[in-house]
Amino acid sequence: MQFKRRNRPPQAARDILQQISEVVHNPARERFELWVAGDLVGVLGYQTESTPDGLVITVLHTVIYDEYTGHGLGTRLTRGALDYAREQGARIRPVCSFTKEYLDAHPGIVPIAA
Image (cartoon, rainbow, N blue to C red):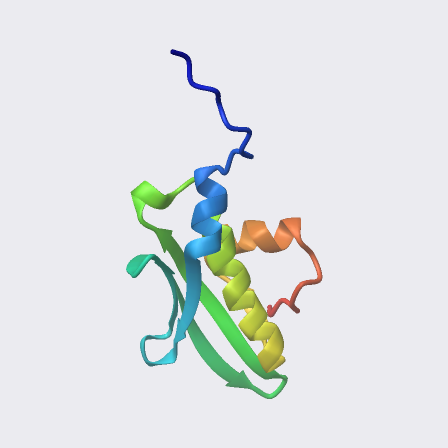
C-alpha cells in the first residue's frame, strides 16, 4: 500500500520561529529580549543618554543563543529595538557590529548619533 502525499506548503523552521517569537522591552535591565515559546533565546543590550539634541540609544551588543542562530531572529530583535527608538524619537549609536551592519544595509530607518 502506498500513501499519497498531501500537498502542504512547506514551512521552514525560520518561518515558524519568526511567527512564535516575541520581542519584549525590559527597561529595568536596559535590554530587549527575544522569547520563543516561553524561552529566552536572545538579548540586545543598550544604554540611553539624554543629550542637548535629544535621546541617544547606544546599542552595545546583540546575542542570540547558538541553537537559534541562522533563522533571522537577530534581525527580528534588532528591528524591535529600532522600532522602539523610532517611536521615542531617539537617535541610535550602534556599537554592536550586528546593529551597525543592519543599519548600513537599511539606511534611514533611524537617525544615527555620532
